[in-house]
Length: 263
Image (cartoon, rainbow, N blue to C red; front, side, top):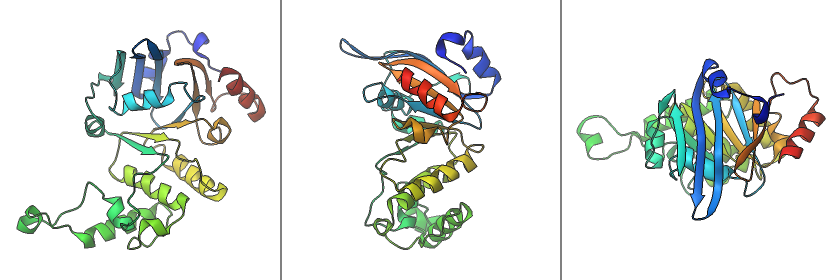
């Protein structure tokens, strides 16, 4: 079992394990309130890293800093070992960081294919494209082929609002993956989904983790244990515990106990 107290030199260990994203001593103050107090961890290639904690633990603040929506008061963010300074979410996207939220940013009146390319529409080539005409045929073919390859057989011509919550969330995740992100942030993506939808989406995340490492932010640590390779616990803005689910000898119940104690 790994804990923050027992992991001297963890930054060196993380670098040797091919870290793609590293937070070093991240601090965030709101006036006199310290939301994050020296948070450090690394996201490694080929893994899903769970970030858990109760409401107010600092999870949302940390995600906003990683995706460029907030600026840290102190500390460093590194992508592939290089210092990253994000002034906006657009900067984070350019660096290869995509985010999927609990409430997916989909427009229910638009079709699946239109949502799939929302904000990044495919235009015709030449003068027609320069005039802003969208290539609907190509968007249809590419979104259908990608969803089908990932195991979701959806009619991309239908409005996204006609599909289940699990299907809509799957479209959100796959839309993010389609544009080849280096890192995927998943902020409570499984909340309010049916058990069947959760199971399918969890299977999908596990299938693609080698292509795109992920940080899964959640307060539901019991559900996250089935998906994550490692889990970090935030409490009052600090890392209070960490466990490697690939190497631990603990039973699932013992893992639950460990996480509960550190939350």
